[in-house]
Each structure stands twice: as C-alpha cells, then as structure tokens.
Length: 262
Image (cartoon, rainbow, N blue to C red):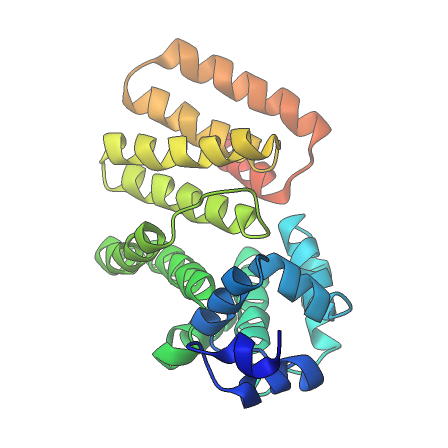
C-alpha cells in the first residue's frame, strides 16, 4: 500500500509521510482510521512509535501508583511541543495525575486546564475524559459538588461515545474513571448510579483477569453496603481489603483505609 492509498479518504499523503519519517502523530480520529485500514490497534502504532519514549515508561509507573517516581521523571524531560499534541496531552495527564495524588492540587489543576483547553481537532478523547475526572475530584476537595457534577457529565458523555470494549492500554484509565464516578455518586446520595459505575469497573477487571484497583473498588463496595445498612457485609468487605493490602501495598488503598480508620 502506498502512502497515497493509505491516506485516501482519511488525510493527505504529507500526514502519512510525517508519521513514517518524523514520527509526528496525526489527529486522533485520523489515527483511529489508519488503524482500521491497517487492521491494527492504536496500541500497535503507539507502542511502535513510542516504545523508547520516557512518557510510556512514566505511564507504567503511574499505573503502578509510583507517583513520586513519576514526578521525578517528569522533571528530567521537557514538555513536548504543540505539534506533538498526543505526547503533549499525555505529558500534561502524567503531571496532573501525579500532582493530584501527591497533594499538589494547584499544579494538577493547571495541567488539567491545559488538556481541557486543547483545540477540539487535536483533542485526544481519553486524555480529555481523564482531565475532567481529575478536575471533578479537585472540585470535590473544594466541596463544590455542583461543578464536580458538571465535569463528570462531560466524562459520562465521552465514555458513552467511547465505551470500553476489550483489554487495552487504557484499561487502567477506564477503571479510574468509573471508580471516580462511583465515589461521586455516593457523595451525592445516588447509590444506584454508584453501583452501576462500580459494576462497570469490576467488569473490566474481570475481563482483564487483573487485580488492579481491586482493593479500592472493594472499599467503595463496602461504602455501598453501609449506605444500604448492610453492616455485616461491610465489615467483612473491609476485613478482606485489609488482608489484601498486606499483599498489595497500594498508596491509594492505604489512604482509603486511613480515612476509614479516622
């Protein structure tokens, strides 16, 4: 297949040339179109293109909740240029997420705004969803559940258009989103909606056959039991999480258990 044939109906030949020779990533919609035409996934292209990119390594560290290592790694690299819009949004997401979990709320807020204000044609939908998720959690910390709800409305619209369909590099991102939505709806007293999003997160874990975030989701399930006055089930669930934590020393899970104890 020539560059012109690959580009036909999707983009121009120059874009394909830039992707092959210079590694410049096109608009995400174009990228998805190219993957379908080549019978590949976005993961195939990105891992080939970015296999040595430090942002990929930092993403893995973020998924492992090594937020301090992510912060240290980000200080060693420069923010990507405007032309590399995918990497630029990925960089801002790494900054926003690691800053938020390290308690650097204003830094997290700044990088969320950087992603949210990206022109629509260059916007990567899952980075945009994650930016709104973190932004909503920031509003929660400021006790503004209305503005948090507005952000989460945007998130729900996005994941309706881009539902999780198969195990992929975005698995952890989807779980984070559904977990945040479940916690939000518990805060506003909508237990049924919380259960819906919690079940979606559990479903992804089951599909992936992974224990990632399992303890954190169990903690939310324990809160659901509490809201439904199922106190015995709540106690058993918390005991199970405490045993799980002895094996999986998740920083986020530690914070959830500390909050419960307090």
